[in-house]
Image 1 (cartoon, helix red, strand yellow):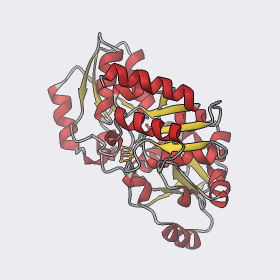
Image 2: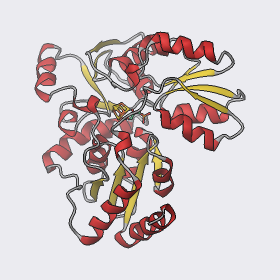
Image 3: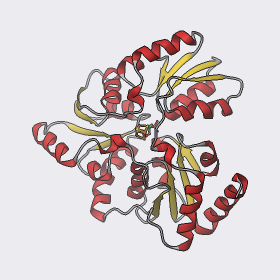
Image 4: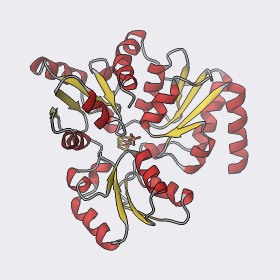
Length: 309
Ligand code: 13P
Ligand code: SF4
């Protein structure tokens, strides 16, 4: 099958199985082109509940599919490649958080959305990289525990110095792989380029940035900016997408190390196979969560949506 034939079959299967395809911005271009909704973690979570389709197929990582299932429990939700997990989401064990909550009972627990459904049950409010500063600023309690990403947490702390925010050691191994030395070298190699960085990067790298924001924030900033040249400090696919979307501008990757192997596991044939399985009525890609997990984990996601991101 050629790529065009594959895309045509995907489109037909989406329709015949009443399935919406959601794709995170770190997915490859052919997958983004086959998707009904694309965007950063916040956009995917927010739009999931409004979808008319009965089935949802997530091209991204497991916590994103779980978030859709929690927000739309009556829908059947599938993960296109079941091996695609996010190592950061698994970093905090529920038992460890239960212990932390006992030792710090007066702190509001703020969880990055990159966490498992099981962990979300114990959290008060979720945030994404695009909503973290705004939500933390709006919270009535000044004492917070932010987990699991201490780099995003450090960025939020600096933006909201009035809050007492406790961090734990954790974060995205992909974004945190870029050193300050590498960032300085990239700036030296491209002296006219603006450096746009995701807050999952190390604080020293974030400090060098001209703009700090989520995947969508970085893409929107680059598209709207009057500048012509950029160093993109997030997953390397974003620099590639921007090169297509803004052909009159130049995009350099901050480091080839910012390649998320989990996000890259999903391929167009996975999408086709997953839809064929949905069509056949049998799929081991379905996300199943108990009613208790769904209702308890939902509280912190609803709180995020109520704060409006
Ligand atoms: P955003 O989608 O919030 O930009 O986060 C990036 C990321 O690493 C997703 O896993
Ligand atoms: Fe997880 Fe980092 Fe990959 Fe995002 S980029 S899915 S946070 S490992």
